[in-house]
Image (tube, rainbow, N blue to C red; front, top):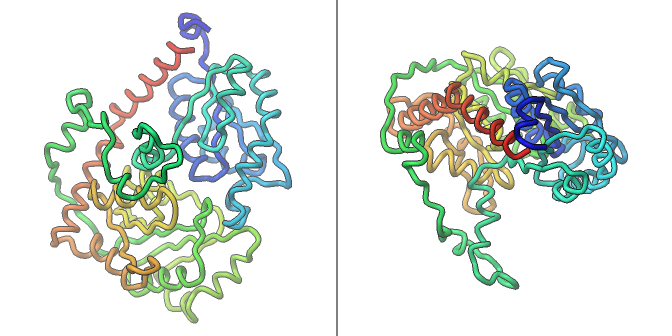
Length: 394
């Protein structure tokens, strides 16, 4: 459709994320932003995910949510044990006929797809619809995959760690073309920060496929108990396990009784965005998934990172070591295991040692990024420019 025609009618996009809520959430947030700029949005996901998706979408009939049928009732990563999470990609592959029929019926201008649906561009092209890959990962995580393309001949060659440490060509940021980066990285923004020593902690694991085992839960929970601060601990488990039984097995004897006046342990669905926005929250302990990291950075709560898999390690190193906007929990050199003392040290650095250099620098850097990410003028410009570009290419 020519751009002048699109400008005179409603731009329509279809959102089709992967089935982990760490992927669904960014697609939901982008949907809300696009809708606020006059874009019609249709959202595709498994039927059992629809209530949770609706609860976070803007309550407007212009955002339509359509359920897809999946084999054996598979709906999201929380419903599978970790070793079977890859089955979701196969399940997505089996929806191709459904998706093609919907695209033919809906006739959107674009379909936004996630990493797992690599068949979308070809399928969409066959029915005359453009596709957009929306990566919910940080650029540093994507770079670990794309960097090997810099080699002239990679066939049959194993890329090692030393290769990945070499910067690829043409990756330097042009500061004059990105003034907001220039202002952030060439000057420090020193602002006073009042931080209540009794501010509660919020710790959340078990959404998506980042489940903790018994030993990990024991060390994490004991660390939260011994730090002496009020806390909310959200733990979830694969659907084939009993959450109550797993908690009883993992938590030390008498734990719930000892912390009953200052600690809450919860299992089940939890809208962490609402918790992170609460003005009294002091610190968020999380796995370092990119969506969780961004949600923490835009709010005032401090960030402690305890990664377990995949891009979580890249994100944690980026935030803690490069941007210095959070603190990563130390792990042992052998096996990478952490102990309650490591949890305590990380939380103390950010919550109690405000007069020491690391804690002070981390809070100042966190404040800088929070101000940038919550700047509505800047964020609205990103979306406005994006919508204009989508219209020009439709």
